[in-house]
Length: 471
Image (cartoon, rainbow, N blue to C red; front, side, top):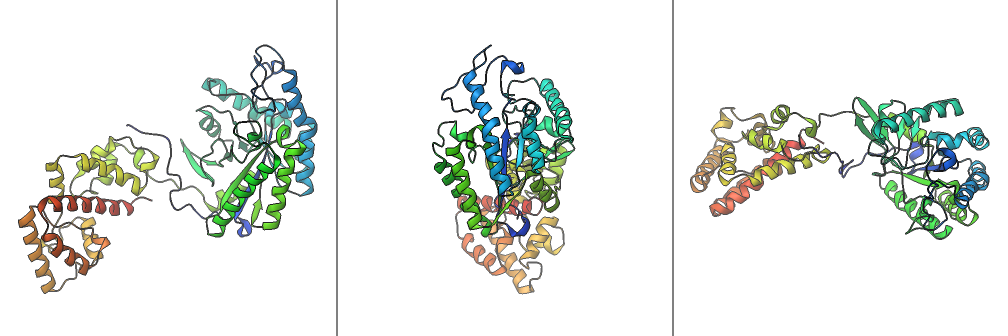
């Protein structure tokens, strides 16, 4: 099958109501990335020094050498930045999720103890803070397993949340396949949690952020001052607060690093933001484990039969009647590049309409001729398809008086005689009166115009039929 894996639809136009505790408008997740001591370093068995997310502009890896200045900047995060953040969050009694690089936690026992004493959630940030993009699948799987083992040894319990960061194409699948994690955050694709189906596992995804993130102090374009960070966080919160007030509550992740936001001039912006939220109200500050528990209880996953995953036989069986007595439309549609975006009524309607529009004029004419007369002899004899029966009943065409039925039959005969195919209209969009009015108007059109109009109505009928079956 020609299938496209990326999901551009998500929740579509109608995301679920998060129903955050206390009627909160926004769920705020403060995430502290603890990477100091887990970064690239020849002391850690790596081939070069670190070059990512530091205050050294344009830093490059130093192959085979230690980079004293780079190490010193990371050391600041452990020695000073962490404790400044620890005081800020504990004094305000704010819950925190730590993305802890396991090897970094092993080298920072006092900081780990402080995290645990504060009741912070300590999730796994992988074994090492390195790039995984070119890592062989088996090696990455082994490193995930070792991270889980070492994390358990260090903290006394296995991690229940995961974020790699510098991930590979395999990372989310490999971590989900362990069955270990309540939540995984290696995506940036939504403002709400969502469920990913990986084999037999329903994996909860808590999307993360690279923009409401102090890493922008170390990238271009980025933040220069704490005030800029404050303004961005404030504007994000105010926008999400307004959406939550309108019945669309969202989740707001804030990414922090000890060596970055832990600097005095930068943390000032974070403090202003926390003051702003406290004054405005409407926030639920929560660890990611609490957001995951709430979402799992409030919005448990329910699997559906997805069109993009169906076999040809099942797809044709399920959707072969969407275009009246024309299963070939579904058969050809199955061969298109389908994906998650086509697992909705609107998405699949588009795919099938493409098939219909690209068919020959004779093929499309055959589809038109396959449609029954409105309130015609087949309806009287109860020989319509179930779809047509329900559609005609929706406009009470199954309850006509003798005079009304005679009028419909007269118009049907005149229309078919002139144009060579039956009058087609999306009955569910109309009333009996509007159908009769359209009959009168369209009977006067030329056949080319009516062919185009009838084809458009066939597509509309197909869309309505699919909405009976798919979200």
